[in-house]
Structures are given as structure tokens and as C-alpha cells.
Amino acid sequence: MPFPQALNGRAARALAASAMLLMAAASEAQLRLDITQGVRDAVPIAIVPFGGQAEGATTEVASVVANDLRISGRFAPLERRDIVAQPTSGAEIRFEDWRLLRADFIVVGRVEPDASGLAVSFELHNVRTGARLLSGRLPTTQGGLRSTSHRVADLVFEKLTGLPGAFSTRIAYVAVDGRPPAQRYRLIVADADGYSPRTVADSTEPLMSPAWSPDGRSLAYVSFEGKASAIYVQRLASGERVRVSARAGINGAPAWSPDGGRLALTLSRDGNLDIYTLDLASQTLTRVTTDDAIDTEAEWARDGASLYFTSDRAGSAQIYRVALDGERRAERVTFTNSYNARPRLSPDGKELAMVTLDRGGYRIAVMELASRNLRVLTTSTQDDSPSFAPNGAMLIYASRERGRGALAAVSADGAFHQRLSSDQGDVRDPAWSPFPPRG
Amino acid sequence: MKTMHVLAVALIALGLAACQKPTQTKPDAGAAPADAASTSGLGSEGAAAGGKSTTGAALTPQQQALADLKQKSVVYFDYDSSEIRSEYLPVVAAHAAYLVKYPSARVRLEGHTDDRGSREYNVGLGERRAQTVRRALLAQGVAEAQVTTLSYGEERPAVEGSDEAAFAQNRRVELAY
Image 1: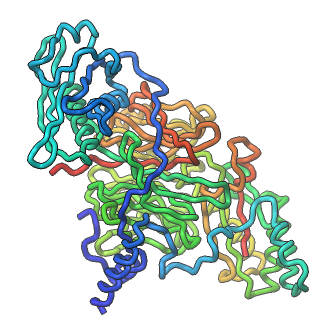
Image 2: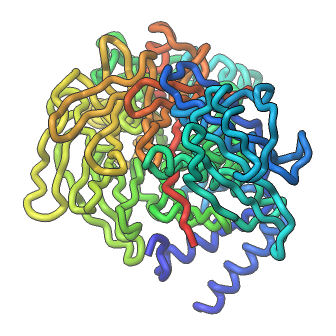
Image 3: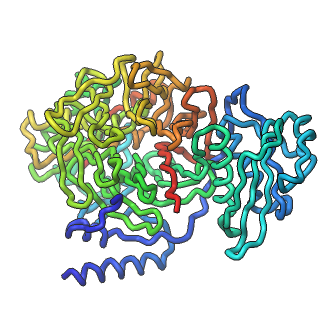
């Protein structure tokens, strides 16, 4: 039950006051994705232009698939100019040609008319053995060709790595333009490769901390409209918005429980920041921490039974964990470095990403929970807001570049780095979506 | 009553759908009334512009006192600290004296941080700075009802830049009337 089905009177009035239908996708400056540090052992793969598509078609399936595999860091797609033959089915592949080009794998396919509109057929072969590893046929439409191409990339990636591909996922982030104090804040949702950015909220006051519902259909976020912070939950398809917390003081750091029924959030009702949980259907608020320190940035354990959070109760920011039943005594989780904040759990629940103060710089690190071994993944000095891809392979985070906020991504092993930059203004506060629902 | 709510939702949804615009975050009916969104407190350089705009007409003693106060309405802080540095104690005392003299006056304390570290943690740090100034005002006789606090964390820098000079100007509490 990821979205409150029954709204009580207060929530219904808030909805009436702010309900909006989101229609046309606003055209926004797109993020440009550049690989800043590649990996030497990326697997060479040939993605042959698909049959049934003219060169320069609006959405070339092969280009989208090749770009997805390239930005995963694990594959090195052959350059288009090196692709001399254009087989569109397995029977047409002359494997010796592709062995000469040193491709380990090859993807071929075609786009054909279909009862529903279009269909994309594709095959993945091992170049050395000639074996067909995967084939499929996905019905689509002209408008759906890009998302179908991401799906092909997902399936190829999963077949070759054992990890589900995350190319059909999205990212939410905040873009800010203008100079203080006259700034404009936009909450944007884009495809994971930076395409199709769409503004979902727009304000002259700060927007921050977007958090995806577990079903990927809603975002919770903080807005300072009306010169006070409040937490909103917004349905992406319809744009309808519910103000779920606008209590006196701070309303911040929303995080969804794994079942989508509750939000953890930070309130400062008595001038001191503490963590609470809010049941979205019943609006029941439960206090979790009571310490006389800054307690914030909750993250749910995968079983929903405990929360990780940031607290400076020991003098500087560190990460703690508290069980939601029993005495709620918090145990400290981080001990390396003098500042560790903003915990984010890996999809398998075994690792915790965070911001750590490492040799004078605020950097992204991942700690293995069992061993407490901390790996620092980045080298800049002002990195924050790490967020795992739902397959755990990459993290997106906020960084700074030439004095402006930029997004960047790094593989979970720290070997592969990319940058997502915007031509205008600052971009910050990224959150990677869960996998889309599969019907 | 229930029907009217449903109707209201439907009408609003229809009316706004016609605009075909992304959600504009206007203040909700339930939120405190907002003044113009662009008038968010004072920059760190003081309020020279605010003073000019009121010259010409004769000022009441309270207006004059407020204009004087606005020349010094920002308290700056050390890195990761929420202690009021001694050179800013007179600033806080001047605001306290004004608020005690004019009990109908209201001040909004806006806490801010530099942009290093985690965003939501910085919201907490900004709140703690605002609370420190609030306690200092209350200790000097200001009534609780005269003071509200708000923390923007690192979201509303006074100046841009990633050097210590910029960081120092951004770690602040603005006293806004």
C-alpha cells in the first residue's frame, strides 16, 4: 500500500489545496553524461544497428543499447565506424568477422511493424562460440522505442553479468538557477541516462531531499514554500500532491519504509531534531529518538525493523542504528573518520553508503556492515547525497565542478566514474529510483 | 460535506489541468501566510537598501530603531559550531533590547550553514544556530511568542563560492522582521 488510500480530513483538505494534474513534459536542459574514469577490463561488445531503422532515426535502438552498456562501465561497445557488416538476425552473423574486430559478444535485431504498432526483436550471441545466449521480441510503439531499447540493454546486461540492468530506472534531482537570494528550485525526474528530464515541482523557495516510494510511483520531498519546511508526497503520473507533515519547526529527511506504508522523517517540535515515523494511512506519528542532539537522515533497514540515522550525540556526526521495537537504544555503526553522515543502504542490505570526512574532504564511502571495512570511492572535497542504483552496481551522488553543483556516479567498487553535468545552474540532491514495476 | 470536498478536489484539478504546467509550489491554505517569496531576510552585507527606501518620510521612533537594527542583523558562526562568538553578543543584545521595548515586534531567526557535508544534517546545524540565538534573546527578556526559528541549512547561501571566505559568510543566523 505505497500511497495512502484513505485520506483523513486534514490530508484531504491539503490535497484539495494543492492537487494538480501534471500534463505535458516540460522541456528542460538535459544532463550530459561523460565517463571521467573508465575501466581497463570493460568487455568488448558489438551492438549492430537494428534492421528496419534508417540511420539517424529519432531513437536508434542500437545507439541507446550501446550507450547504456557503455555507461554501466562494464562494457566497451565497438565504435559505429568499426561495424562494417549489418546482420539483423543470428543466421546472418559471420562470426569470424567479429572475432577479427575483437568483440566478445554481439547484439543484432530489428524493428518491425506489429499488430500493436512496433516490435523489437533482438538476439545476443557469444562471438567465440557462436552460441545464442538470449533472444526476445518486445512489442512497443514509436513513442516507447527508447524505453524498449533500455529494456533490451537491461536483459543483455543481466545475461552477461548476472545482475539485473538498471537502464530502465530514473533519477530525481533538484536543479537550482539564479543567484542568491533570487533562486528558482525545480525538482526534476529524468531517465537514468539523463534523457527526458521533466520538472515535477517548481518553487522560489528551496526544494530538497527527494525520496522514491518503493513502487517508484511517488516522490516524497521537502519544500520550504511559505517560508517553513514541509514534507509532500507527490504521485508522478497524476502530479497530485499531499502535504503529509507541516509541523512547527523542521520537517525534513523523508524516507519510505520498505512496504511503502510509513515515512521516517525528522521533526524539531521542541527545538531539537529527532526522528519520527509517520503512518501514511492513519497519520499516526511515532517518536523514535529522544536524544538532545541532531538526529536526522533516517534510512530503513531492509526488514523495516530498524533505522539507520545520522547523529552528533557523540560530538560530531556519526551513523547509528536503532530498532523500532523495544527500548529504542541506538547503537553506533561508524567509527572510522570524524564525520560520517547520510546513510544509504545497498539493495542487498549488506553495505552502507555515506558521506565521510576523509583527509580533509567530504567524500562518498561505502562500509561493509559485517566487517565495518570502509571504502572511500571519490576524491573531490564536497561530495554528498549518495544513492544506490537498485541493482547495487553504481551510486549517484552530488559533487561540485568549477564552483557549481553537479551530479556524478561511481561504481560500487570505486573503479568507474562518470559525471552528469547541466549547462545551466546547479544540480544536486540525486535519488535513484527503484526498478520499475513489471507487468 | 464530504461531497463538497470531493467536488473541490475535482474542480481544482480540472482548473489546474487546463494550465498544463508542472506543480507550482504555492503556499497551501493551511500554511502560514507568506510574504513575497523574494524578500527572504537580509544579505550578509547589511540592509543599506532597506534603509534608503524609507528615507524621506519621517520615521516613528520604532521605525527608526528597526532601521538602525537592520544595519547589524546577521550573526556569524565558526565551522560546525553553534556558539555565538563574543563580537556578536552586542548584536544579539541590541535586537533583544528592541524586542523588549516593542513587545508587538516579531523576529524570525533563519539559520544557515556553509555547503560542506550532508544537506539534511546542515538543516539541523542551522536550526541549532537559530535556537542558540533564540535562547540568548529569551534570556534577555524577549517573550517566546516574539521569536520564530527556521533553518535553511546550506540551501540559501549569502554568497557563492567554495573557499573559507565564502564558507564563513554563509555560516550565519539572520534576524528578520
